[in-house]
Figure 1: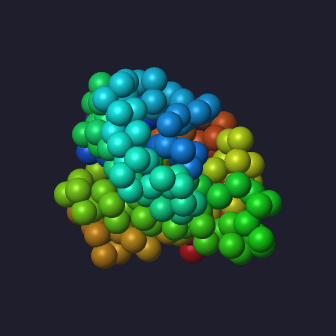
Figure 2: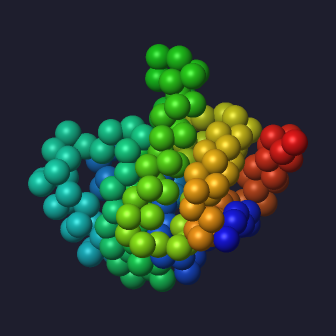
Length: 177
């Protein structure tokens, strides 16, 4: 189905799954993570606690993904993924790989959940400090490549501000042949 790029509130997206740019605790935080936890409500938080107790006692590793209910939000699922913290990966290439893994593992999990639509925020570009243009190119390349074998999926990039959407648009235009 393709890619949609827009400005909006990811917590209001009517997609099968929305992606949470989570921290490894999966218990909420600031930015997108905090907004999703507030909007999802206690049911989502309880699932996060159960996952931590039963499957991830040390937290969700960077680049991996796990799903919970979306609670009170219109989406069916929240896919929590942890992006890399820029400058703490060992190398820029390792940060790139981990960011790509966060997108790819989220897409694969949505596919396993029989989703046909997924909405992403800009993973790692807030407090985690990943350069926005670089993150946009990695997100675009990863999603575009994955869609070649999963054309039934609609992937939305939902940005909190027009400025961030414009950075993504510009980076993607530079990437296209």
